[in-house]
Image (cartoon, rainbow, N blue to C red; front, top):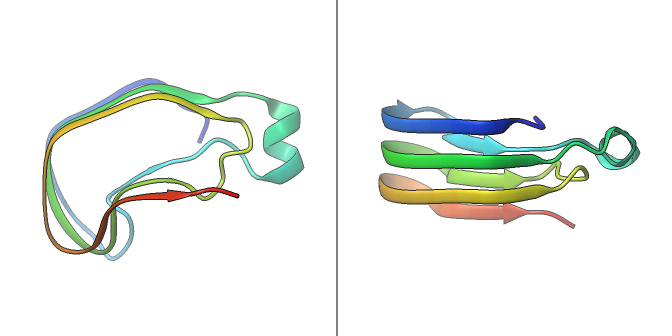
Length: 86
């Protein structure tokens, strides 16, 4: 939540929820805190989940900027990339 300059790479993840979730605050709390998640690199990720490989949201009131995802290998997934915002 409200993370900056993050690099997730060369990883295998298997979970019952989203593999990687990018968030930045919930409703008025995220707006008043005002800190976005930014500078996030997701590279060479392999994994499986019944939900999303990479989820942006659902809590993004602080904003999300500059997310790079490349060389992602997903299997048995609900969805690859899920953007969950209002």
